[in-house]
Amino acid sequence: MDLWLKFISYGPVVFLSLLPSTTYSQESHSAVRPSVTIQAERLVRPIPQDPATSFAWRLEQDQQTLLALLAFCTALSLNAVKTKNDPGASRLQHADAVATALNMDMRNWFTPTAENFFSKVSKTRILEAMTDAGKAPNSNAPAQLKKSALAELAEKTITGTGWLPEPVRIQDAVKEVEEMEELAAD
Image (cartoon, rainbow, N blue to C red; front, top):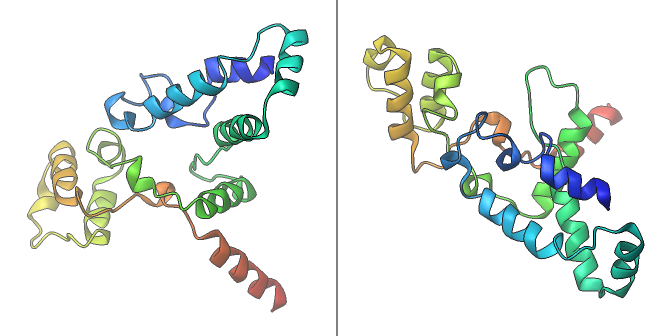
């Protein structure tokens, strides 16, 4: 259990809200941070630090408490962070399968803004995002804007549409498995 406590304290790239605030702004991840903090306080703080009493404590807990602790540990240990040229396809499929089973809707946890997304991608990608969200520009004028202005425009235009960048979208794991099985059968 000692590793778990260190894991929560130092949080590797598993939950965006646990990354240093220099990487992700507090504001853009404010929906996640309080939830994780509350759960950590409720589930982890009661665990004794001493290994001998820690094990005894766990043996005394009811099934509901142990399952809640297991679910929390599992949630924080999933790594669904997608990167360029990510070799972790099976890791991402597992994370998507868990998200699909839980009916997780990332729109409740992440909203693309100029600060957290649009300023970090190319102007071409910003225009593609607007089109993908069903908010394609009526003219070529936005393409002539400076990137910062285009990022701000995209944020205003896309807000409320429910659009998410592809790396944040949860793939339908069931559909993905069926497609893989079809390919294997061919």
